Length: 433
Image 1 (cartoon, rainbow, N blue to C red):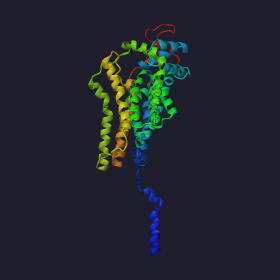
Image 2 (image 1 turned 120 degrees about the vertical axis):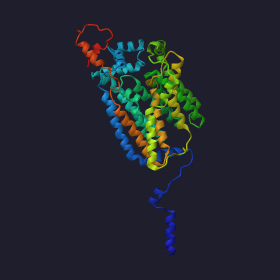
Image 3 (image 1 turned 180 degrees about the vertical axis):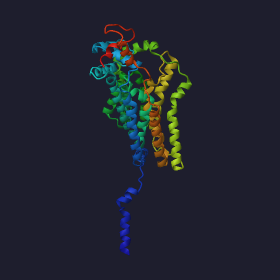
Image 4 (image 1 turned 90 degrees about the horizontal axis):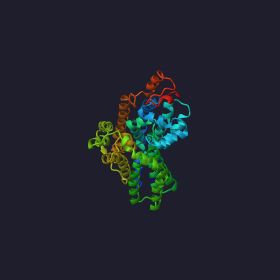
């Protein structure tokens, strides 16, 4: 009897491996919230994640790749005009006539067009690759922000947004600029966490690159500043001198763009095609109806699946909300303010495309806070499936019904090679493929 008691005591002091796995551990300190956000629901999301991954592949194939061979639309023909001829001619045309918002993109477009591939495929391939890269970087950023169980959902929201689908198969610089924007935010968060110089350099270079690809990416700088100020006040390891250097470096790198940007601003009236927005327009963009309806459906399904629905209290500083809310709100707010206060009408969706990744992360963050776990899994899956299904049902020619390729072919059949055709400057390049 006494020996059995001693053996039972030793067993209690040295629990079995199964006991260790089943015993919950408590994490304390500043990493407690991050620990819960990363690990709490990841193992139970495997089936839902697999389903969303299949939906992601279907979306990319059905909505991105299917548009690659379609005719260029009006604004894409501007890219063709900017890069036709020799490299020197393309560079001079892009620099002296700033209808193209990026000299760097014109150089890239000239290089890919010179490969000899069909025009539409050659010009759109960089955008497809860049947008796919943006999705991968967004996934990495979601992991870093503690949304491991909902990272795939964030990417699903991202790839199904209309602006993203449009830019992914568009022969213009928006997809590459968006990739630079998301990568710069990822490097910013790494730098403010680690204080490492390589992370600071990567942030500064990617920020400058985004502005080289599109000037309106500069509207992300207030987002960076707001997040950096918050982190410095809440214990970031970065010295203030490092912040000054990291802020000054993108400005110095962008100085060569000043003449081109000034010329574009001087000609802002001819390039402004949108009207002056009102508060109703801002509200429509701020709360996209498709996302709101899918969220409502997901929350309703989560409630039905578990019989209860609640949001768990986040055990972490609000650094995530500061970053995501400023990232989502500031680009569109600045475009709205400039459109209201000046002749430059910038309240056009693609001009604040940079905020779409933040919307995707905000949706994932909202789902991540749902309790119990069964409701969270159901809500996330329903939101993702609804977004993918709804977008595929609405699919068509995302660039509209413009058929410039057909128009050029019809003109070529009626005129000789040396006949000038006013307004149809795509004539010569159409013969290249």
